[in-house]
Image (cartoon, rainbow, N blue to C red; front, side):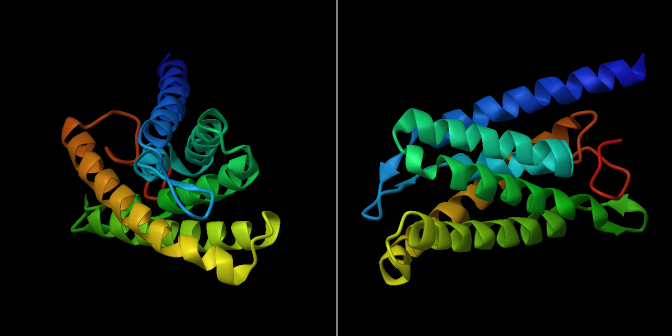
Length: 186
């Protein structure tokens, strides 16, 4: 019974995070000179990793962001976004639940470190994607790096704030409420 309930919770949370990622990415989309756009989707991508762990988090983060690219009119970014945002959520899922002090979980350090590494990956990933796949060249694609850094900082700050709220709510079955110490949902 408990296993069935946990499975339903994982499926519904994954669906909600796909939708939230898509909405936050598409709702505020500010076009940039590099043919991309700035958005608030990184907040939901990081939360997807933190809430769902290293398997379902990348699915939610990658699919939600890729759907938003398709909806907003940037189909050339869909394959790159699917991979880049999926890896971001995977990175985010790796460490938050591994930090503890006196047997009590304190994932704040893990959240911050994972967010920094995930956003650095996103910035480098889009720079390479625009330079190589889209064909803008490395110098031209570098123009988008500053926008991605700003987007990354805003997304990481928003995700950390929301994770604190969710931690206080003690959402059951999530990494934020507790885990087995390996980034997996109990």
